[in-house]
Image (tube, rainbow, N blue to C red; front, side, top):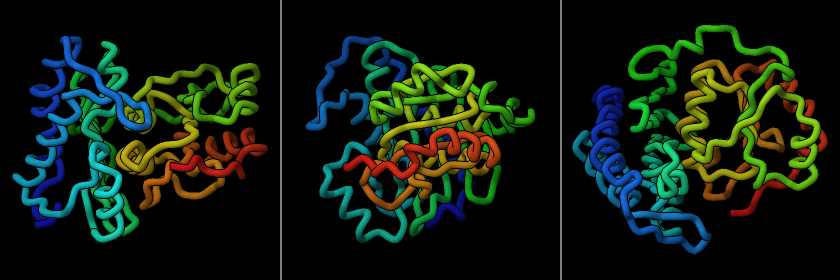
Length: 276
């Protein structure tokens, strides 16, 4: 059975129960923190949500493979190489925030068919906000159009709020942004999938990240596109690629604003992508 057999909104609602049952009781509790080979944080909550999301997909007849952030690299590669369609899962986006008691984290899933992202959902259990979009439907927040998206987007870089991850940018660019930024204000919230959802929902105007895994950008990139935004990587190529290689991201709430943002970034637009 495919997603066309059941409303995606029904499946996405299942993330609410998972977030409320598996994440919130563990948030700010005394849970063990471990570290992956790359130094990133992982907790029992990551594993618990991963298992529950797989069960949820199975309950809705989704028998396509799952590629999760918590899988071994070899299994991730096998899914990419052999599965025409699969679910891309980040069971806990913002694990460092979660483990440190910062209330900015989410569950994010996306369905990939070939090279297309066809469905995306990101759930923030702290604020009880469920962001969803499909390739055939607009961005929704808790089932309705996000209020901020009904207002005209900012048209000038100087008035924009930017979400920028400085630590993954080349030092010259990071330094220029820190000292001579073209935008009004900057934030870095530490949970990529949720930052994309907030950008799509109109809570920020610009985005810049030096290197993201596919589960970081897939759902949110679809949401931004369906909300009228635009994006590419630093080399002007698509942000999402059916690959485990980390890719940079440059985005804005409109084509015009993205063009201005890229023009300012022009000296770095041909920068090589971050290796996986």
